[in-house]
Amino acid sequence: MTIDALEAILLIPAISAALLAILPGYLLTAKLNVVAALATFLASLLLFVIEPTSGQYLLLDDLNKVFIVLTTFVGFTASVFSASYIHHEIEIGRLTPAFLRFYHAMYQALMFAMNLALIANNIGLMWVAVEMATLTTVLMVGIYRTHEALEAAWKYFILGSVGIALALFGTILVYMAARPVVGEGMDGMVWTVLVKHAAQFDPALLNVAFVFLLLGYGTKVGLAPLHAWLPDAHAEGPTPISAVLSGLLLNVALYALLRFKLMLAVNPAAITPGPLMVTMGLISVIFAALMLYRRRDIKRMFAYSSIEHMGIIVFAFGMGGPLANFAGLLHMTMHSLTKSAIFFAVGHIAQVKSTQKIADIGGLTATNPALGWSLMLGVIAIVGLPPLGIFMSEFLVVSSTFARAPWLTVILVLGIIIALGGLFLRIGPVMFGEPKGNTAPAEASYVPMFTHLGLVLMAGIYLPPVLVSSFQNVAKLLG
Image (cartoon, rainbow, N blue to C red; front, side, top):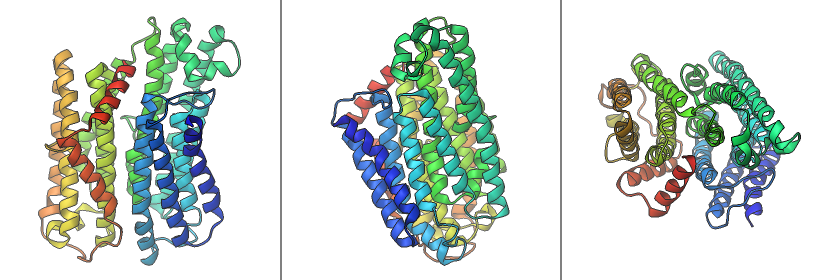
């Protein structure tokens, strides 16, 4: 039954992508896209009621369960938002059926690629899946065919290709380190085999490999200074894809880093990945926090917020230990839910106001109260104010760091406070300034946005014991 559930997580989006590629008509394919995403999410829930097993190609353990369920859930809610959002884009003429011919097929291909990366028990297969996800999103980012959208897509393609090439070189070095111990062939690329024998690998090769892997997959995570593709891709691509990029694809690359971090931890002579991850995490937090003050495009602003929060997450996992790892997992989950909800809100606002420029949006709480207050709640959540979920995760990150390295806490908290000031400074006029632009209601569905914000609010007040237990198990696994 385990293999069936794992296969379903791959087969549903793969078959759906092939079917959606040949079906005509936007409304039909939009509905089928939602049904496929829901079916994949329901299949992922089965992983919590069956015993985890692994084979030569597919792996299921406590670590990837968390990522799979989060990915399929946000993939489903984003598909619901996308159905009505893109339909409105067609109605107002921003998109044409010709541009959208393979949109839903690519959406399911993206879900397939991300799911494959998360459950692959082979480092080569995982690399291929991450590259497939990158190429798919490149096509979706450029879907508007404007000069800016095509430039963002090419920038994403070029920088993403550089990152994935570095990750490929790191993957090859891991295989070279494994070959003298496990022999040539497939075993040298199987996760479970690599972790079992990692203590005997050449530490020098592992050290160099992790540096390349950190740079390569770190580009996909959006860590500064490897982040240059991310703001453009978020700002110019369709908003549902911005939500998926920020809420999911960054996590998939992070997952790959965590897997390699686990492998290095087994080898006592290899470098400790923690300090490298802590350094890049802090650089990302400070850099992104400062950049928030100069943003003029609302989607680009929240893209830099994603860089900041991925920095916090990488920092937490770099610190390590049960509490910091638990905080990192919780922060990752809360960020995915919150940031995707924010992009849902921003998508509504951009459609209502016909602009993404912050200067042309004002007085939302007066002109569009549901949108204005929802976005305000999302911003309150993302800056880490109580009683929402990110407050709890940031508090755990800060408290665990203060107990072990107080001087790092000062830098981290400074970055968080700077980001808080930047977001409130830029978002204040949008919420409470002089009303500007159209006041018509948004056409897209509010349900995904309200669902995410409700979950984030609930998590700040009460975490279900089953979720706490699951995160604790993963935190112990990460070491």
